[in-house]
Length: 115
Length: 115
DNA sequence: ACTTATCATCGTATATTTACGATGAACGAT
DNA sequence: ATCGTTCATCGTAAATATACGATGATAAGT
Image (cartoon, rainbow over all chains, first blue to last red; front, side, top):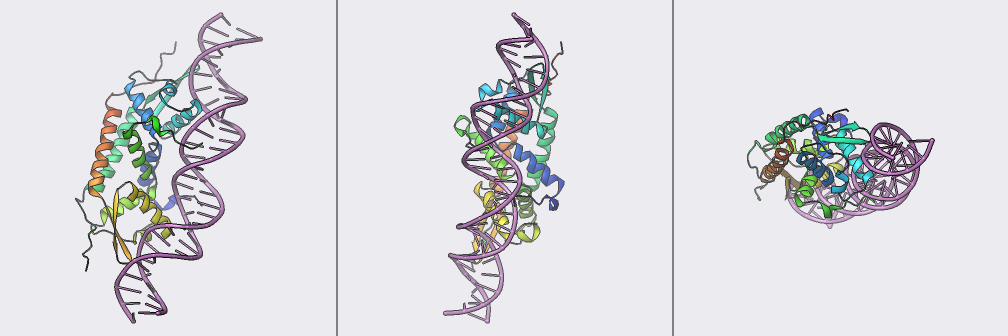
């Protein structure tokens, strides 16, 4: 099965993996950049900046919203999206924590003493 | 189709998304931590620390090796895995660059002046 | 009330991911 | 040479992801 056995992993591992999943598509990376560059929050013009159909972009936005990296405010028929700075900062901290752990050990080597 | 139109994205966006994909599973996060904690590089005992079958763990290791986050040295019938510190540092820098961009703008708000 | 614009969701097709058991390859030990 | 250990790969099944067009929902404007 493709059923992940998440029971055996820590909350942090699951959280980080989930964030990573949200970032695991070039379109979503690009959307985050677009929303950051446009200081005024953007709406569906994101579609014009991506080589994807409107429904597909909507799905990507949904995924980013799912993990809280962006927010969307309904304004009439439009929806105004913007990056969630607070969440981005928090996520950045979590990632930093992970990489601090992963790189703290200095350089290790696999070189096994070939006997 | 599930064919990603990667033509329209930058190399950096594709690279970051690819790294994120490699990190998008709790087991792979955990494997990286295990390889870091064990100062001496580990072999297949990783399997014993994960709630997954040996073949599944092997697949996860392959994915991490694909993006260069870990290395594996064949030592007889065993394979000695270890975290690739250099790669981890480089990846960390790339991620930092991204988040610096994403968080540089200060706090934005979606709050549309409800007229 | 009707149209237009904007966006989400539905339905669907295909690709990829995740997982497992089974098998195969490499090597050390007997 | 045979056996056991270790690990990758194959084959396969189910879940998820990606993408699109079509449809539905909402609100502004006519």
